[in-house]
Length: 373
Image 1: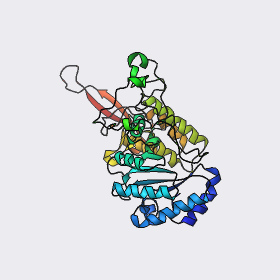
Image 2 (image 1 turned 45 degrees about the horizontal axis):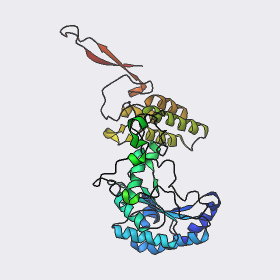
Image 3 (image 1 turned 90 degrees about the horizontal axis):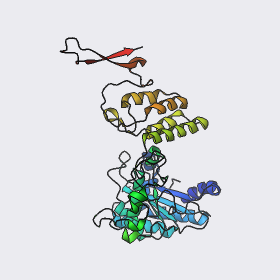
Image 4 (image 1 turned 180 degrees about the vertical axis):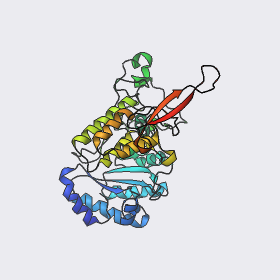
């Protein structure tokens, strides 16, 4: 819930209490609507701390389910820890931390998340803490959790790009023969003392399931989540995913088609929802001349036009069947387009090679690009 008035928050929470495992107070949103309403990350300023504590306290007293919160970093680590300790004392049962400062309404991700600050926050509190930030692939889930010592990992937009991010890869039966360390943790080489896992020895117990939330709260702990498995081998497994890394193009296509088939069966309010989600699957990044689709072999401008022209989910399914492949380049030479890659005026580009007139010998040639109706 996003809000700033204790009574209003309690009234809203009571409407949903019977249907949820916990009620979370949003203290991390930096968007313009949060600024206008005076909630989210705009309650992190010290002058608003008493109001925030009263909101958490009122929710904790009124509800039978746990009250949790998500915050961002404050200007200093000391302030962050002091504020979080106040939330804990007010009745917050679990805290998620997006390890970036509030920034502005238009620039919310300036640089990487400060996971060292999250680690310090976890060590200062006795309630479960979730780390948020710097997860781009499956192996980051394990690495970030080991580094921070947190009880779980929270992921946002990366899950839109790869919904299988938390899915454990099947064991590779060849690993035991080629690398005993991957099947026997006792054979694993200790982390480099100067590396990012320098404190792994101090946090060797972070994979022990534990939760301090009241019994019966299903969202209490992520510590036993099957997605927090150590990274496995780098060889592709039977799912098509490279274990410990990114999924293959075939797996991205399969998951996207599964999503779109569900969207066709359970229609979203607008096709725009499915269109935007498919863009995430395709790895859209940048705008204008810098636009790329990291997981598509198609020309970015043509793919963008095809997505924009799709009027229903069935047309998005046709696009998804052909669009996935190794890509990510901004400037691409002309090439035979798939059927839906429309050029100007709705024409489809045709790519032919004809002999060059006056070329010496028979090996010369030049490319001609024709436009077919």
